Image (cartoon, rainbow, N blue to C red; front, side, top):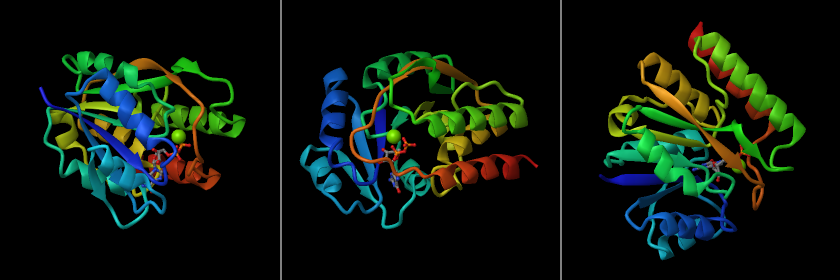
Length: 217
Ligand SMILES: Nc1nc2c(ncn2[C@@H]2O[C@H](COP(=O)(O)OP(=O)(O)O)[C@@H](O)[C@H]2O)c(=O)[nH]1
Ligand SMILES: [Mg+2]
């Protein structure tokens, strides 16, 4: 049973070493793939030194990066997670357990616990609004559509096509789950304060909403 943990990165030199170490402390069997969009810091260098597979993309965009990485991944299971130490690595085994019965497992911060200060009020509002919009427009209940931790079986990730270049990636994943009739479940997860700086801007929230509505109608 091969497992890849896919970590999208842009300027995460403060976090990437800890991220890789903590994944290895859960299991040495997971393959760790870092997909990096030309970071201007030492992210790629650190990831390579630590023995992770590094896929370098020469254009910005989390969606674009994950799209490219998906074409290279062949393992039976895939976990995509943010590389900024905000998502719980220790939940990976639970994701894999659920993927025996589901096509997709989504980590839900709103069903779990959000550390004080991990989400700004505007960020929280945006997350809740976009989640409601996604549930309403696609008629499928989801509690955290912008989650940065997703698990897929090979059958599922091979069906998913990504066309969102940036932070619309997660709603793109959700829309693809619905359109391909994939069975998904949610796992309550904790969400922690980030090290380093966020790359998300308020304008990204509008872009995400636009994506949801455009793809539906
Ligand atoms: N490959 C790649 N990863 C990115 C890019 N922008 C952000 N990321 C990564 O995507 C994850 C989420 O980004 P983050 O800034 O934490 O957004 P937030 O969690 O929504 O505040 C982090 O692991 C980032 O390093 C990008 O242009 N390319
Ligand atoms: Mg983050």
